[in-house]
Image (cartoon, rainbow over all chains, first blue to last red; front, side, top):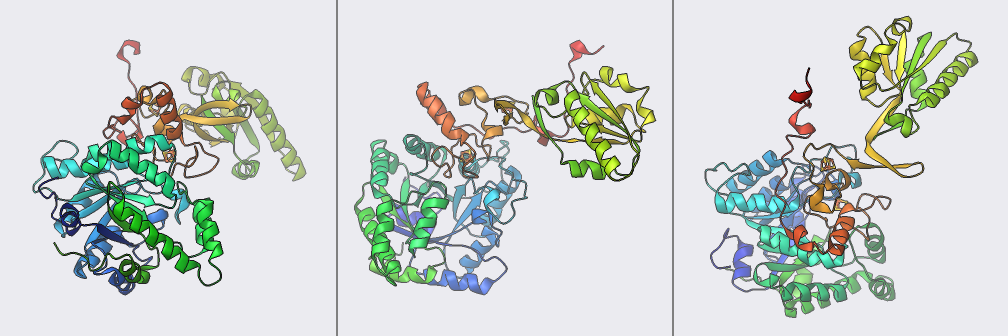
Length: 310
Length: 222
Ligand code: SF4
Ligand code: SF4
Protein backbone atom coordinates (compact mmCIF):
# COMPACT_ATOMS: atom_id res chain seq x y z
CA UNK A 1 0.00 0.00 0.00
CA UNK A 2 2.60 2.53 -1.03
CA UNK A 3 1.66 4.92 -3.84
CA UNK A 4 -1.79 6.51 -3.95
CA UNK A 5 -4.40 4.77 -6.03
CA UNK A 6 -6.66 7.78 -6.22
CA UNK A 7 -5.30 10.52 -4.02
CA UNK A 8 -8.68 10.92 -2.33
CA UNK A 9 -8.75 12.47 1.11
CA UNK A 10 -9.94 9.17 2.57
CA UNK A 11 -7.10 7.27 0.99
CA UNK A 12 -4.54 9.81 2.19
CA UNK A 13 -5.89 9.75 5.73
CA UNK A 14 -5.68 5.98 5.83
CA UNK A 15 -2.24 5.81 4.26
CA UNK A 16 -0.94 8.38 6.70
CA UNK A 17 -2.00 6.01 9.45
CA UNK A 18 -4.73 8.18 10.92
CA UNK A 19 -7.82 6.59 12.39
CA UNK A 20 -10.38 7.30 9.66
CA UNK A 21 -13.88 8.53 10.37
CA UNK A 22 -16.45 8.42 7.57
CA UNK A 23 -20.12 9.33 7.50
CA UNK A 24 -23.15 8.60 5.43
CA UNK A 25 -25.94 10.56 3.83
CA UNK A 26 -28.96 9.39 1.85
CA UNK A 27 -29.99 11.53 -1.15
CA UNK A 28 -33.48 13.04 -1.01
CA UNK A 29 -36.65 11.37 -2.35
CA UNK A 30 -37.05 14.28 -4.70
CA UNK A 31 -34.85 17.02 -6.02
CA UNK A 32 -34.55 18.86 -2.73
CA UNK A 33 -30.98 20.04 -3.03
CA UNK A 34 -31.23 22.33 -0.02
CA UNK A 35 -32.20 19.48 2.24
CA UNK A 36 -29.30 17.39 0.98
CA UNK A 37 -26.91 20.28 1.54
CA UNK A 38 -28.27 20.82 5.01
CA UNK A 39 -27.88 17.17 5.98
CA UNK A 40 -24.41 16.92 4.49
CA UNK A 41 -23.45 20.23 6.07
CA UNK A 42 -23.63 18.64 9.51
CA UNK A 43 -20.97 16.18 8.46
CA UNK A 44 -18.59 18.75 7.01
CA UNK A 45 -15.33 18.81 8.92
CA UNK A 46 -16.43 15.92 11.13
CA UNK A 47 -15.67 13.08 8.74
CA UNK A 48 -13.10 12.26 6.07
CA UNK A 49 -15.63 11.25 3.44
CA UNK A 50 -19.39 10.87 3.21
CA UNK A 51 -20.98 7.77 1.70
CA UNK A 52 -23.76 8.67 -0.70
CA UNK A 53 -26.15 5.78 -0.87
CA UNK A 54 -27.46 4.43 -4.16
CA UNK A 55 -31.24 3.94 -3.98
CA UNK A 56 -30.72 2.18 -0.69
CA UNK A 57 -33.32 -0.38 0.35
CA UNK A 58 -34.43 -0.13 -3.29
CA UNK A 59 -36.28 3.11 -2.66
CA UNK A 60 -35.92 5.64 -5.47
CA UNK A 61 -33.93 8.70 -4.56
CA UNK A 62 -31.78 11.24 -6.34
CA UNK A 63 -29.02 9.32 -8.08
CA UNK A 64 -25.94 8.73 -5.98
CA UNK A 65 -23.57 10.28 -8.52
CA UNK A 66 -25.64 13.46 -8.74
CA UNK A 67 -25.84 13.79 -4.98
CA UNK A 68 -22.10 13.07 -4.77
CA UNK A 69 -21.43 15.98 -7.13
CA UNK A 70 -23.51 18.29 -4.97
CA UNK A 71 -21.36 17.30 -1.99
CA UNK A 72 -18.20 17.95 -3.95
CA UNK A 73 -19.49 21.46 -4.66
CA UNK A 74 -20.02 21.90 -0.96
CA UNK A 75 -16.42 20.99 -0.29
CA UNK A 76 -17.26 17.59 1.18
CA UNK A 77 -15.58 14.46 -0.14
CA UNK A 78 -18.16 11.91 -1.26
CA UNK A 79 -17.82 8.16 -1.21
CA UNK A 80 -19.96 7.31 -4.20
CA UNK A 81 -21.90 4.09 -3.71
CA UNK A 82 -22.86 1.96 -6.66
CA UNK A 83 -25.13 -1.08 -6.68
CA UNK A 84 -25.45 -3.78 -9.33
CA UNK A 85 -29.21 -4.00 -9.10
CA UNK A 86 -29.98 -1.14 -11.45
CA UNK A 87 -27.20 -1.11 -14.04
CA UNK A 88 -25.67 -3.49 -16.49
CA UNK A 89 -21.97 -3.52 -17.26
CA UNK A 90 -22.32 -0.80 -19.89
CA UNK A 91 -23.98 1.63 -17.51
CA UNK A 92 -21.63 0.66 -14.70
CA UNK A 93 -18.50 1.40 -16.68
CA UNK A 94 -19.82 4.63 -18.14
CA UNK A 95 -20.91 5.83 -14.69
CA UNK A 96 -17.46 5.02 -13.33
CA UNK A 97 -15.90 7.17 -16.03
CA UNK A 98 -18.48 9.88 -15.51
CA UNK A 99 -18.06 10.23 -11.77
CA UNK A 100 -14.29 10.23 -12.08
CA UNK A 101 -14.46 12.91 -14.77
CA UNK A 102 -16.38 15.08 -12.31
CA UNK A 103 -13.85 14.69 -9.53
CA UNK A 104 -15.24 11.81 -7.49
CA UNK A 105 -12.41 9.71 -6.09
CA UNK A 106 -13.99 7.10 -3.77
CA UNK A 107 -16.42 4.43 -4.81
CA UNK A 108 -18.10 1.74 -2.76
CA UNK A 109 -19.14 -1.39 -4.65
CA UNK A 110 -22.32 -3.16 -3.55
CA UNK A 111 -24.75 -5.77 -4.86
CA UNK A 112 -27.74 -3.71 -3.75
CA UNK A 113 -30.84 -4.66 -1.81
CA UNK A 114 -33.33 -6.66 -3.82
CA UNK A 115 -36.09 -4.48 -5.28
CA UNK A 116 -38.69 -6.58 -3.49
CA UNK A 117 -37.99 -4.50 -0.35
CA UNK A 118 -38.36 -1.15 -1.93
CA UNK A 119 -41.01 1.14 -3.32
CA UNK A 120 -40.89 -0.26 -6.86
CA UNK A 121 -41.23 -3.99 -6.29
CA UNK A 122 -42.58 -4.43 -9.83
CA UNK A 123 -39.23 -3.46 -11.32
CA UNK A 124 -37.03 -5.80 -13.33
CA UNK A 125 -33.61 -6.11 -11.76
CA UNK A 126 -30.32 -6.23 -13.58
CA UNK A 127 -27.60 -8.03 -11.62
CA UNK A 128 -25.59 -8.43 -14.80
CA UNK A 129 -22.52 -8.54 -12.58
CA UNK A 130 -22.20 -8.96 -8.82
CA UNK A 131 -20.43 -6.79 -6.26
CA UNK A 132 -17.25 -8.85 -6.47
CA UNK A 133 -17.19 -8.40 -10.23
CA UNK A 134 -17.95 -4.69 -9.78
CA UNK A 135 -14.81 -4.32 -7.67
CA UNK A 136 -12.90 -6.18 -10.35
CA UNK A 137 -14.37 -3.93 -13.05
CA UNK A 138 -13.35 -0.74 -11.27
CA UNK A 139 -9.89 -2.14 -10.63
CA UNK A 140 -9.42 -3.31 -14.20
CA UNK A 141 -10.43 0.11 -15.49
CA UNK A 142 -8.12 1.85 -13.03
CA UNK A 143 -5.05 -0.35 -13.05
CA UNK A 144 -5.08 -1.94 -16.49
CA UNK A 145 -6.74 0.92 -18.32
CA UNK A 146 -9.16 -1.54 -19.84
CA UNK A 147 -12.86 -2.08 -20.11
CA UNK A 148 -14.37 -5.42 -19.14
CA UNK A 149 -14.20 -6.53 -22.75
CA UNK A 150 -10.43 -6.03 -22.77
CA UNK A 151 -10.55 -2.91 -24.89
CA UNK A 152 -8.27 0.00 -23.91
CA UNK A 153 -9.85 3.05 -22.36
CA UNK A 154 -8.57 6.58 -22.76
CA UNK A 155 -7.56 7.94 -19.31
CA UNK A 156 -8.14 5.58 -16.41
CA UNK A 157 -10.54 6.43 -13.61
CA UNK A 158 -8.27 6.56 -10.55
CA UNK A 159 -10.75 5.63 -7.87
CA UNK A 160 -10.21 4.46 -4.32
CA UNK A 161 -12.23 1.26 -4.47
CA UNK A 162 -14.18 0.14 -1.47
CA UNK A 163 -16.47 -2.73 -0.63
CA UNK A 164 -18.83 -3.73 2.12
CA UNK A 165 -18.49 -6.68 4.43
CA UNK A 166 -21.13 -8.17 6.63
CA UNK A 167 -19.41 -10.16 9.36
CA UNK A 168 -22.76 -11.27 10.77
CA UNK A 169 -24.58 -12.75 7.82
CA UNK A 170 -24.52 -16.50 7.63
CA UNK A 171 -22.59 -18.69 7.07
CA UNK A 172 -20.26 -17.01 9.56
CA UNK A 173 -17.25 -19.21 8.77
CA UNK A 174 -17.34 -18.10 5.16
CA UNK A 175 -17.57 -14.37 5.82
CA UNK A 176 -13.89 -13.75 6.39
CA UNK A 177 -13.12 -15.70 3.22
CA UNK A 178 -15.54 -13.55 1.31
CA UNK A 179 -13.77 -10.50 2.68
CA UNK A 180 -10.47 -11.94 1.46
CA UNK A 181 -12.02 -12.51 -1.93
CA UNK A 182 -13.15 -8.88 -2.16
CA UNK A 183 -9.68 -7.68 -1.26
CA UNK A 184 -8.14 -9.96 -3.86
CA UNK A 185 -10.60 -8.64 -6.43
CA UNK A 186 -9.35 -5.11 -5.76
CA UNK A 187 -11.00 -3.55 -2.73
CA UNK A 188 -8.67 -1.01 -1.09
CA UNK A 189 -10.96 -0.31 1.83
CA UNK A 190 -13.83 -2.06 3.52
CA UNK A 191 -16.77 -0.64 5.42
CA UNK A 192 -18.56 -3.21 7.51
CA UNK A 193 -22.23 -3.65 8.20
CA UNK A 194 -23.45 -1.97 11.42
CA UNK A 195 -21.88 -3.80 14.31
CA UNK A 196 -23.81 -4.53 17.48
CA UNK A 197 -22.61 -8.00 18.39
CA UNK A 198 -19.12 -7.13 19.57
CA UNK A 199 -18.18 -10.69 20.55
CA UNK A 200 -18.86 -11.95 17.08
CA UNK A 201 -17.08 -9.00 15.52
CA UNK A 202 -14.00 -9.55 17.66
CA UNK A 203 -13.92 -13.13 16.47
CA UNK A 204 -14.34 -12.03 12.86
CA UNK A 205 -11.49 -9.53 13.15
CA UNK A 206 -9.27 -12.06 14.83
CA UNK A 207 -9.71 -14.33 11.84
CA UNK A 208 -9.16 -11.44 9.43
CA UNK A 209 -5.94 -10.47 11.21
CA UNK A 210 -4.77 -14.07 11.30
CA UNK A 211 -5.15 -14.12 7.55
CA UNK A 212 -3.27 -10.83 7.27
CA UNK A 213 -6.20 -9.13 5.56
CA UNK A 214 -5.71 -5.89 7.54
CA UNK A 215 -2.32 -5.51 5.89
CA UNK A 216 -3.80 -5.64 2.41
CA UNK A 217 -6.77 -3.38 2.95
CA UNK A 218 -8.15 -0.78 5.37
CA UNK A 219 -11.06 -2.04 7.40
CA UNK A 220 -13.53 0.51 8.76
CA UNK A 221 -15.94 -0.71 11.42
CA UNK A 222 -19.60 0.18 10.84
CA UNK A 223 -21.38 1.99 13.66
CA UNK A 224 -25.01 3.08 13.76
CA UNK A 225 -26.21 4.55 17.04
CA UNK A 226 -29.60 3.25 18.12
CA UNK A 227 -32.15 6.02 18.48
CA UNK A 228 -34.86 4.03 20.19
CA UNK A 229 -35.84 0.61 21.45
CA UNK A 230 -38.20 0.34 18.49
CA UNK A 231 -35.33 0.85 16.07
CA UNK A 232 -33.26 -1.80 17.83
CA UNK A 233 -36.15 -4.26 17.73
CA UNK A 234 -36.83 -3.50 14.09
CA UNK A 235 -33.20 -4.01 13.15
CA UNK A 236 -33.05 -7.24 15.11
CA UNK A 237 -36.19 -8.61 13.53
CA UNK A 238 -36.62 -7.17 10.10
CA UNK A 239 -33.25 -6.23 8.63
CA UNK A 240 -31.73 -9.29 7.00
CA UNK A 241 -28.17 -10.04 7.99
CA UNK A 242 -28.30 -7.76 11.05
CA UNK A 243 -27.22 -9.11 14.43
CA UNK A 244 -28.59 -7.15 17.40
CA UNK A 245 -28.01 -9.01 20.67
CA UNK A 246 -30.85 -9.12 23.17
CA UNK A 247 -28.50 -7.67 25.79
CA UNK A 248 -28.25 -4.42 23.84
CA UNK A 249 -32.02 -4.15 23.54
CA UNK A 250 -32.26 -4.72 27.30
CA UNK A 251 -29.65 -2.06 27.95
CA UNK A 252 -31.60 0.46 25.88
CA UNK A 253 -34.84 -0.46 27.62
CA UNK A 254 -33.14 0.01 30.97
CA UNK A 255 -32.10 3.55 30.11
CA UNK A 256 -35.54 4.86 30.94
CA UNK A 257 -37.87 7.27 29.26
CA UNK A 258 -36.25 10.01 27.24
CA UNK A 259 -32.78 8.59 27.74
CA UNK A 260 -32.69 5.78 25.18
CA UNK A 261 -31.08 7.84 22.43
CA UNK A 262 -28.32 8.94 24.78
CA UNK A 263 -27.76 5.32 25.80
CA UNK A 264 -27.55 4.41 22.11
CA UNK A 265 -24.91 7.07 21.57
CA UNK A 266 -23.01 5.89 24.65
CA UNK A 267 -22.92 2.36 23.30
CA UNK A 268 -21.66 3.70 19.95
CA UNK A 269 -18.95 5.70 21.73
CA UNK A 270 -17.83 2.64 23.68
CA UNK A 271 -17.63 0.76 20.42
CA UNK A 272 -15.56 3.49 18.79
CA UNK A 273 -13.16 3.48 21.75
CA UNK A 274 -12.71 -0.25 21.36
CA UNK A 275 -12.26 0.00 17.58
CA UNK A 276 -9.49 2.56 18.05
CA UNK A 277 -7.51 -0.14 19.83
CA UNK A 278 -8.70 -3.18 17.91
CA UNK A 279 -6.05 -4.82 15.79
CA UNK A 280 -6.80 -4.54 12.10
CA UNK A 281 -9.31 -1.70 12.37
CA UNK A 282 -8.30 1.42 10.48
CA UNK A 283 -11.29 3.60 11.23
CA UNK A 284 -14.99 3.87 11.82
CA UNK A 285 -17.82 4.31 9.37
CA UNK A 286 -20.61 6.13 11.19
CA UNK A 287 -24.02 5.60 9.66
CA UNK A 288 -26.22 7.99 11.60
CA UNK A 289 -29.33 7.38 9.53
CA UNK A 290 -31.49 10.53 9.42
CA UNK A 291 -29.50 11.70 12.42
CA UNK A 292 -26.86 13.68 10.59
CA UNK A 293 -27.19 16.62 12.97
CA UNK A 294 -25.94 14.39 15.78
CA UNK A 295 -22.70 13.55 14.00
CA UNK A 296 -20.71 16.61 15.21
CA UNK A 297 -21.59 15.76 18.80
CA UNK A 298 -20.76 12.08 18.37
CA UNK A 299 -17.48 12.88 16.63
CA UNK A 300 -16.57 15.36 19.36
CA UNK A 301 -17.35 12.93 22.16
CA UNK A 302 -15.54 10.13 20.33
CA UNK A 303 -12.43 12.28 20.35
CA UNK A 304 -11.92 12.14 16.60
CA UNK A 305 -12.01 15.91 16.05
CA UNK A 306 -10.51 17.84 14.52
CA UNK A 307 -10.08 15.68 11.47
CA UNK A 308 -6.50 15.59 10.30
CA UNK A 309 -5.63 17.39 7.08
CA UNK A 310 -3.37 15.49 4.74
CA UNK B 1 -40.00 -29.94 -16.39
CA UNK B 2 -41.80 -26.73 -17.18
CA UNK B 3 -43.99 -25.81 -14.24
CA UNK B 4 -47.23 -23.92 -14.70
CA UNK B 5 -50.28 -22.99 -12.66
CA UNK B 6 -53.89 -22.52 -13.74
CA UNK B 7 -54.98 -19.02 -14.60
CA UNK B 8 -57.76 -17.76 -12.31
CA UNK B 9 -61.02 -19.05 -13.72
CA UNK B 10 -62.42 -15.50 -13.78
CA UNK B 11 -59.69 -14.48 -16.19
CA UNK B 12 -60.41 -17.42 -18.48
CA UNK B 13 -64.16 -16.78 -18.42
CA UNK B 14 -63.53 -13.15 -19.31
CA UNK B 15 -61.27 -14.18 -22.22
CA UNK B 16 -63.87 -16.41 -23.87
CA UNK B 17 -67.11 -14.73 -22.80
CA UNK B 18 -68.06 -13.78 -26.37
CA UNK B 19 -67.54 -17.23 -27.88
CA UNK B 20 -70.07 -20.00 -28.25
CA UNK B 21 -67.81 -22.76 -29.54
CA UNK B 22 -64.68 -23.35 -27.50
CA UNK B 23 -62.00 -25.99 -27.89
CA UNK B 24 -59.83 -26.77 -24.86
CA UNK B 25 -56.53 -28.42 -25.60
CA UNK B 26 -54.36 -30.12 -23.01
CA UNK B 27 -50.88 -31.58 -23.26
CA UNK B 28 -49.55 -34.88 -21.96
CA UNK B 29 -46.08 -33.44 -21.25
CA UNK B 30 -44.89 -31.39 -18.29
CA UNK B 31 -48.25 -29.81 -17.54
CA UNK B 32 -49.80 -33.22 -17.04
CA UNK B 33 -47.08 -34.07 -14.55
CA UNK B 34 -47.61 -30.84 -12.62
CA UNK B 35 -51.38 -31.35 -12.62
CA UNK B 36 -52.33 -28.29 -14.57
CA UNK B 37 -52.84 -29.11 -18.22
CA UNK B 38 -53.51 -32.80 -18.76
CA UNK B 39 -56.73 -34.48 -19.88
CA UNK B 40 -58.09 -34.37 -16.34
CA UNK B 41 -57.69 -30.62 -16.15
CA UNK B 42 -59.10 -30.23 -19.66
CA UNK B 43 -62.23 -31.99 -18.41
CA UNK B 44 -62.49 -29.83 -15.31
CA UNK B 45 -62.10 -26.60 -17.26
CA UNK B 46 -64.66 -27.73 -19.85
CA UNK B 47 -67.23 -28.50 -17.14
CA UNK B 48 -66.57 -25.16 -15.49
CA UNK B 49 -67.22 -23.34 -18.75
CA UNK B 50 -70.41 -25.29 -19.36
CA UNK B 51 -71.72 -24.72 -15.83
CA UNK B 52 -70.94 -21.03 -16.04
CA UNK B 53 -72.74 -20.72 -19.37
CA UNK B 54 -75.76 -22.52 -17.98
CA UNK B 55 -75.82 -20.31 -14.92
CA UNK B 56 -75.83 -17.27 -17.14
CA UNK B 57 -78.42 -18.63 -19.54
CA UNK B 58 -75.93 -18.81 -22.38
CA UNK B 59 -75.35 -21.55 -24.90
CA UNK B 60 -71.86 -22.88 -25.26
CA UNK B 61 -70.31 -25.86 -26.98
CA UNK B 62 -67.08 -26.99 -25.40
CA UNK B 63 -64.90 -29.67 -26.94
CA UNK B 64 -62.05 -31.39 -25.09
CA UNK B 65 -58.84 -32.63 -26.60
CA UNK B 66 -55.44 -33.55 -25.21
CA UNK B 67 -52.37 -33.82 -27.38
CA UNK B 68 -49.32 -35.95 -26.81
CA UNK B 69 -47.24 -32.76 -26.83
CA UNK B 70 -48.17 -29.27 -27.95
CA UNK B 71 -44.54 -28.33 -28.58
CA UNK B 72 -44.30 -30.71 -31.49
CA UNK B 73 -45.79 -29.88 -34.93
CA UNK B 74 -46.38 -33.54 -35.59
CA UNK B 75 -48.83 -33.84 -32.69
CA UNK B 76 -50.28 -30.38 -33.19
CA UNK B 77 -51.36 -31.47 -36.66
CA UNK B 78 -53.75 -33.92 -35.07
CA UNK B 79 -56.38 -31.23 -34.58
CA UNK B 80 -56.20 -29.77 -38.08
CA UNK B 81 -59.60 -31.08 -39.07
CA UNK B 82 -61.46 -29.86 -36.03
CA UNK B 83 -59.85 -26.61 -34.97
CA UNK B 84 -61.61 -24.46 -37.54
CA UNK B 85 -64.98 -25.47 -36.11
CA UNK B 86 -64.25 -23.46 -32.97
CA UNK B 87 -64.31 -19.75 -32.35
CA UNK B 88 -61.85 -19.92 -29.50
CA UNK B 89 -59.13 -22.32 -28.48
CA UNK B 90 -57.84 -22.47 -24.92
CA UNK B 91 -54.50 -24.17 -24.56
CA UNK B 92 -53.59 -25.31 -21.10
CA UNK B 93 -50.07 -26.33 -22.07
CA UNK B 94 -47.08 -24.19 -21.07
CA UNK B 95 -46.55 -20.97 -23.02
CA UNK B 96 -45.02 -22.92 -25.88
CA UNK B 97 -48.22 -24.82 -26.64
CA UNK B 98 -50.57 -21.96 -27.51
CA UNK B 99 -47.85 -20.44 -29.67
CA UNK B 100 -47.30 -23.63 -31.63
CA UNK B 101 -51.06 -23.78 -32.13
CA UNK B 102 -51.22 -20.15 -33.25
CA UNK B 103 -48.39 -20.66 -35.69
CA UNK B 104 -49.79 -23.83 -37.18
CA UNK B 105 -53.35 -22.47 -37.39
CA UNK B 106 -53.04 -18.76 -38.23
CA UNK B 107 -56.77 -18.08 -38.29
CA UNK B 108 -57.48 -19.63 -34.88
CA UNK B 109 -58.03 -17.43 -31.80
CA UNK B 110 -55.82 -19.07 -29.20
CA UNK B 111 -55.90 -18.21 -25.48
CA UNK B 112 -53.48 -19.31 -22.75
CA UNK B 113 -55.25 -21.11 -19.92
CA UNK B 114 -52.26 -21.38 -17.60
CA UNK B 115 -49.48 -19.17 -16.32
CA UNK B 116 -46.12 -20.69 -17.10
CA UNK B 117 -43.83 -20.26 -14.14
CA UNK B 118 -40.39 -21.81 -14.43
CA UNK B 119 -38.20 -24.83 -15.10
CA UNK B 120 -38.06 -26.95 -12.01
CA UNK B 121 -39.61 -29.90 -10.31
CA UNK B 122 -41.70 -31.09 -7.40
CA UNK B 123 -39.78 -31.05 -4.15
CA UNK B 124 -42.75 -32.31 -2.19
CA UNK B 125 -46.23 -33.33 -3.14
CA UNK B 126 -47.90 -30.14 -4.30
CA UNK B 127 -44.75 -28.02 -4.04
CA UNK B 128 -42.64 -27.15 -7.05
CA UNK B 129 -39.50 -25.11 -7.15
CA UNK B 130 -37.28 -23.50 -9.73
CA UNK B 131 -33.98 -25.03 -10.71
CA UNK B 132 -32.84 -23.61 -14.04
CA UNK B 133 -33.12 -20.27 -15.79
CA UNK B 134 -31.98 -21.59 -19.16
CA UNK B 135 -28.86 -19.43 -19.26
CA UNK B 136 -27.45 -21.50 -22.10
CA UNK B 137 -24.06 -22.13 -20.51
CA UNK B 138 -24.39 -24.41 -17.53
CA UNK B 139 -21.96 -23.76 -14.68
CA UNK B 140 -23.47 -25.61 -11.74
CA UNK B 141 -20.44 -27.86 -11.29
CA UNK B 142 -18.56 -24.84 -9.83
CA UNK B 143 -21.23 -24.48 -7.19
CA UNK B 144 -21.67 -27.95 -5.78
CA UNK B 145 -24.15 -28.88 -8.49
CA UNK B 146 -26.46 -26.02 -7.51
CA UNK B 147 -27.50 -23.18 -9.79
CA UNK B 148 -26.99 -19.68 -8.35
CA UNK B 149 -28.29 -18.05 -11.51
CA UNK B 150 -31.80 -19.39 -11.15
CA UNK B 151 -31.83 -19.81 -7.40
CA UNK B 152 -30.06 -16.78 -5.94
CA UNK B 153 -32.36 -13.76 -6.01
CA UNK B 154 -29.51 -11.68 -7.39
CA UNK B 155 -27.91 -14.41 -9.56
CA UNK B 156 -24.64 -13.86 -7.72
CA UNK B 157 -21.67 -15.86 -8.94
CA UNK B 158 -19.56 -14.77 -5.99
CA UNK B 159 -22.08 -14.99 -3.17
CA UNK B 160 -23.51 -14.96 -0.63
CA UNK B 161 -24.60 -11.34 -0.24
CA UNK B 162 -24.83 -9.55 3.07
CA UNK B 163 -28.56 -10.14 3.31
CA UNK B 164 -28.29 -13.89 3.82
CA UNK B 165 -30.02 -14.53 7.11
CA UNK B 166 -29.83 -17.84 8.95
CA UNK B 167 -30.11 -19.79 5.75
CA UNK B 168 -32.86 -17.62 4.31
CA UNK B 169 -32.68 -15.16 1.44
CA UNK B 170 -33.10 -11.47 2.16
CA UNK B 171 -36.22 -11.33 0.00
CA UNK B 172 -38.30 -13.62 2.21
CA UNK B 173 -38.14 -15.93 5.17
CA UNK B 174 -39.82 -18.52 2.93
CA UNK B 175 -36.99 -18.57 0.40
CA UNK B 176 -33.77 -20.44 1.08
CA UNK B 177 -30.53 -18.56 0.54
CA UNK B 178 -29.06 -20.83 -2.08
CA UNK B 179 -25.59 -19.44 -1.41
CA UNK B 180 -25.83 -20.60 2.18
CA UNK B 181 -26.55 -24.07 0.84
CA UNK B 182 -23.74 -23.84 -1.75
CA UNK B 183 -21.17 -22.73 0.82
CA UNK B 184 -22.12 -25.41 3.31
CA UNK B 185 -22.05 -28.11 0.68
CA UNK B 186 -18.69 -27.02 -0.68
CA UNK B 187 -17.29 -26.91 2.85
CA UNK B 188 -18.62 -30.38 3.53
CA UNK B 189 -16.95 -31.58 0.35
CA UNK B 190 -13.76 -29.84 1.45
CA UNK B 191 -13.83 -27.68 -1.67
CA UNK B 192 -13.86 -24.24 -0.07
CA UNK B 193 -10.79 -23.22 -2.08
CA UNK B 194 -12.83 -23.53 -5.28
CA UNK B 195 -15.38 -21.07 -3.95
CA UNK B 196 -12.61 -18.64 -3.10
CA UNK B 197 -11.69 -18.39 -6.76
CA UNK B 198 -13.03 -15.25 -8.34
CA UNK B 199 -15.75 -15.98 -10.89
CA UNK B 200 -15.51 -13.37 -13.65
CA UNK B 201 -18.57 -11.70 -15.18
CA UNK B 202 -20.64 -14.20 -17.09
CA UNK B 203 -21.40 -13.88 -20.75
CA UNK B 204 -25.15 -13.63 -21.08
CA UNK B 205 -25.07 -14.00 -24.87
CA UNK B 206 -26.36 -17.54 -24.58
CA UNK B 207 -29.18 -16.45 -22.27
CA UNK B 208 -32.31 -14.52 -23.22
CA UNK B 209 -30.18 -11.35 -23.18
CA UNK B 210 -28.60 -12.47 -26.46
CA UNK B 211 -31.98 -12.20 -28.18
CA UNK B 212 -34.58 -14.88 -28.93
CA UNK B 213 -32.84 -18.20 -29.14
CA UNK B 214 -32.78 -20.89 -31.73
CA UNK B 215 -30.83 -24.10 -31.74
CA UNK B 216 -29.68 -25.71 -34.95
CA UNK B 217 -28.13 -29.15 -34.86
CA UNK B 218 -26.91 -29.74 -38.37
CA UNK B 219 -26.67 -33.49 -37.91
CA UNK B 220 -30.39 -33.64 -37.20
CA UNK B 221 -31.58 -31.27 -39.88
CA UNK B 222 -33.16 -33.21 -42.71
S1 SF4 C 1 -26.27 -22.58 -14.91
FE1 SF4 C 1 -27.68 -21.96 -16.56
S2 SF4 C 1 -28.21 -23.85 -17.62
FE2 SF4 C 1 -27.27 -24.46 -15.66
S3 SF4 C 1 -29.01 -24.73 -14.26
FE3 SF4 C 1 -28.32 -22.61 -14.05
S4 SF4 C 1 -29.55 -21.41 -15.47
FE4 SF4 C 1 -29.78 -23.58 -16.04
S1 SF4 D 1 -29.60 -13.87 0.48
FE1 SF4 D 1 -28.63 -15.57 -0.63
S2 SF4 D 1 -30.05 -16.17 -2.25
FE2 SF4 D 1 -30.71 -14.19 -1.47
S3 SF4 D 1 -29.73 -12.70 -2.84
FE3 SF4 D 1 -28.33 -12.97 -1.11
S4 SF4 D 1 -26.94 -14.61 -1.71
FE4 SF4 D 1 -28.67 -14.65 -3.15
